Every structure is written in C-alpha cells, then in structure tokens.
Image (cartoon, rainbow, N blue to C red; front, side, top):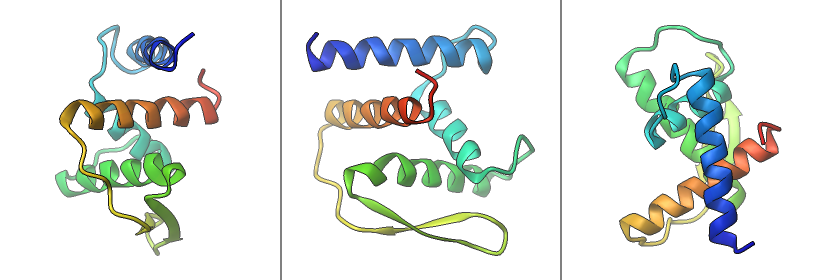
Length: 117
C-alpha cells in the first residue's frame, strides 16, 4: 500500500473513532482533534477552559505533534502543570495542502504511539 493511501486509511480510522467517542457521531475537524490532543497532553482532565487556555492547549498539541519531526523539544512543566517546549528548528514554508498532510501524519503517528490505532 502506498504511503499516501495508508495515511488516508489511518486518518479515516481516527476520524471514525473520535466521532464516536467525542463527536456524537459527527466527524471532528483537524482543529478539534488538535484541541483534544492538547487537553490529553495537559493531563488535567475535562474542565472548562478560558479562551486563552484553549489557544495554549492547541499550541501544546502542535508542539507535541511536531516534536518527533525535530521542530520542538519538551523543556519543563510549569508550577500549574502546563508543559513548555523549546523550538529546535523553523518550520519549512509549506503550501496549505502540504501543511495539512504534515499535521495529519503527525496526528496519525500520535494516535499510533498512544495505542488508539
């Protein structure tokens, strides 16, 4: 199976699992999935977050997702338990479609590494 076909198959499997668990049957968009990953990585459970916290949760997720690609490195947890990352390298200039493929690949890898698929 070609790499792109496998990515598409894995991505669709993740969408189905998350739609069932979190979307009441509705497929979640990429931003919603990134938000869920941020909540998971924060590790403080389900609670109400302020708007700024939601942005920070998405940042945590992006750092975690792109860490295996060498763009970020975990640094420390602050006194409130929020993880902080160092930037290791600049992200390459990617077209919109290329960005989407990179983030989908990173999400698939995250869920594979965490035993979802």
